[in-house]
Length: 407
Image (cartoon, rainbow, N blue to C red; front, side, top):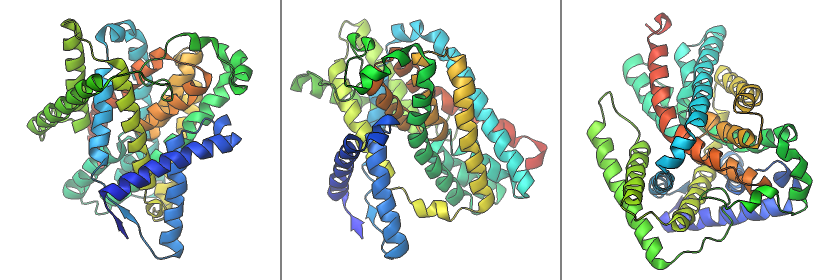
């Protein structure tokens, strides 16, 4: 069964409404701060898995909407990036990047080590490491083609897509529970009862910024929305041109990184000219595109691809999940300060350390919507997850491929 573009958009919207109802009705989802797109999307993905397995029926959604929604979301991250704020949060960003890069290295060490222990090609260790986890579907597919064309690993693309799917699911599931578990160790833990009872945490006295509280009403005007849509369109158009220019060179970067970079330049250039972007309009569009993109990504997961993974690769992924949780609790949270901001940063790290930047933002939103804003986390994580991590990951992967075991 093939669902067209409009039908896919309807389905994604229904998935978001379903997720909203699931979180509202089931206390366990609220307790463990599971994002609404994750809750709704996984239910639909499981239903489609049942149809595939027991009904011999596959439902194919139109994928044309996913790239523009993803790029629009990343452009809103760029439009929200104030260089003055970035300068203020610079030390935190540097420390967080160090934490992130160390995990990327450990993911590859663990993956390669387990692949050698299982007696399989160590390239599978890299595929089940930072390539598909920190890198996600896009990076995974790109490296999968490289492994097929230059290393003769014929099943590389299928394996990396399945690994990235596993990471996206686990990244969306784990962020909330890890943050909930760590809450007792932060100074915000004393306010947990108030948050559960619907009371206002003292942190809510601070005005939340663009992505921190997606359900807060955002006052805006049609003119502001049109202006913001124009800036997003410029970011997408110029960003894709830049991505095409540098494709195949040593400077090659994913399209979304180029779009993000252009949006940052636009936002800060307008601010310097005394015409800052309208934050409320950016918030509205950013949160809508994020929610729809996540719903589409999760409801179209081919969970049966995970069932087709060989036992050694699946075992590596389970070990990577354990590594992420242990690292988040004992390294990320502690290095970042053992406070509430560190907790939100940790939830975000779980999201993109296993999955992708949108998953990280959704994890953080689920936490801050319940326990209060964390401005520094929403400043640091998008830049680290959407920009710096891809550069660091590419350098790390190439360094590992230079090892003698890959000759």
